[in-house]
Length: 238
Image 1 (cartoon, one colour):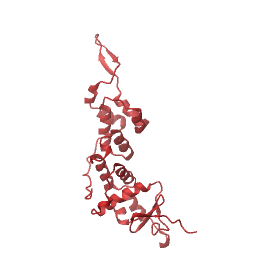
Image 2 (spheres, rainbow, N blue to C red; image 1 turned 90 degrees about the vertical axis):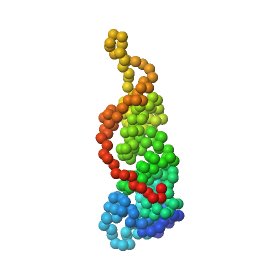
Image 3 (cartoon, rainbow, N blue to C red; image 1 turned 180 degrees about the vertical axis):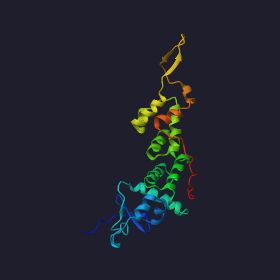
Image 4 (cartoon, rainbow, N blue to C red; image 1 turned 120 degrees about the horizontal axis):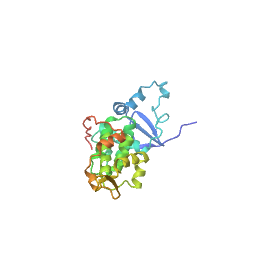
């Protein structure tokens, strides 16, 4: 029985190693993959059977990447090729969801430089929606372990007068939403005429926007003190 005849990617079918993602064949150079990803480096070091049975050798026996979307893989490869071939302007990414795809796969496959580039773009590019979306930054920071985003975003939500909405709670997830609520939703105390203290019912005190919730956030979320980070990788074609 002959193997399925999968279509080839119209652009990212170039050289060396063949991958099957969803129903599309990609063929890319092995060198940048093993140079920049510890996961791919280890995969290529695994003992292989005889030459005819080597995975990725040709279209009949591709390396199958399960659980990866074609769109995500396209984005990762475009940035990887941009890193290797900076003059290819057609491969530059400009959309937030594309760079989120790069962040996702670069974290999963340990592409350290690509991950830094994705974090930098999402955090600094004027085109990125995540710059002003604190809830999304908390979601991504938690999902992809971006420590430099998490504390400032949590602090901004803790300080704001408006409570966490139902929709925001759904996006954050029940555990994160409850932890954040425990930091920010505090009862106010004020002195009664006799010098005792009493509970005061009402809107949250807007003076809370000036309070530093950092110690409490660190305690509730188990955040450690920051470690000095390396400089962000500079991509010449971005």
